[in-house]
Length: 265
Image (cartoon, rainbow, N blue to C red; front, side, top):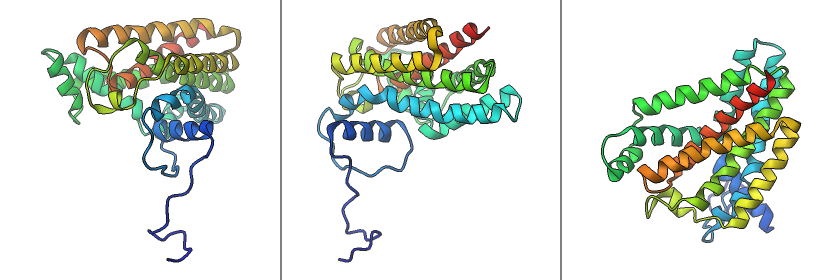
């Protein structure tokens, strides 16, 4: 065996050795499409523990989209700049949460009982409800972002919305049981209350950093929208799946940006 880095016999590059570094690496690997090294088999509950850093990774995703918006806002009309910013966020995540939103919309729109809805959500094909949900999600986020008075205001809003909406994922898992015994939602493990609280505190700090004193109303709007999805999922599906968690993120982000637009106006 040679020292050639391209040799297939070589082990994967080392992952961060500290606990915090490992959690950040895992959160980034799960939420984004960054080409990060493979850490191999993960210990039980590792993803659940890393959720305390979901807001930090979300802020990075929002920051990338926000920088695109701030740059394009100086060169293009507001709506095209906003659409490009939303596109940047989708590319950064590989449409992870958008896919969950579409599947959840199809499942909730299906006729039949709980089992039928869960079966529809596992179908890789996207139905009319899923398509409409994606159209409204992208349109609402872009239209509200286009109302930003400046490019930098849009950047702050995207950072705050991306952070807070992802902090609501471990919070939702505190008040719902997995809808299935298998699948991503159940396999991730349940984050404990400390993880959810840490994520919430970190996200709130990022919200005030991005929105200043205008943060409370958007934060509450996103929380109310996410709670609506939680209530609906518990009644119709019996709990959460990975798709439901993605839908919570999307709905919360859209609601937060709508409220921010109201504060701007």
